[in-house]
Length: 237
Image 1 (cartoon, rainbow, N blue to C red):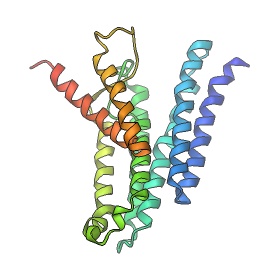
Image 2 (cartoon, rainbow, N blue to C red):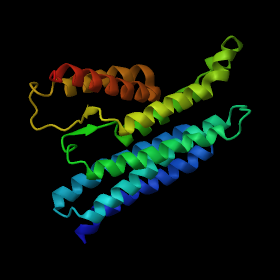
Image 3 (cartoon, rainbow, N blue to C red):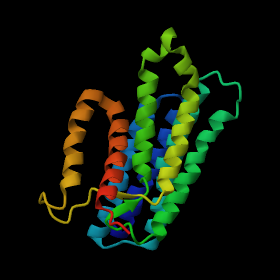
């Protein structure tokens, strides 16, 4: 019986992604983000439970990637698609470009399964971080009353294209050969964990000040900190 527990948790992640997608198509971006977060919680615990129960399996690994592509690939793509559809865009195919991110998320997950370098860190942006960024960003943009101001009409008309440009940048980051730190601790001391503690401590005031939109800022900060750390620790050739 216990061997089915981790896969059940993984399926809860997948179901959360399906629910998030439904809310995305209903333009309820806050609820879509909530279920992406719930999916991320399930995603965090399925591997942990599998290791604790000593029931890790190849099928669990593959199921995890399938669930992740729904929750952290297709669901955020649906959020972007739905948001772009709310604009009066002359080229009606443009919102469908949002689903390119689901394809890149699948590619990133496939690479992760085969890449043995990512045991203690990540190579490229993790799909959960990417999903939380876009969910939070769209929630923030949708709730912003400033965008309706006529003085910002030009920015508002350019916003769909800025979103698509940012989305393609995130697609690149998903598969880029850029080392990014993971919040995994071999010990709890400061030495060797400086970046992780700095990141965690800085997240608190960001969330308190910005609320849900703070998640997007935190993910952007995570990428910047990872890139900066990698440059300072890289050895010259």
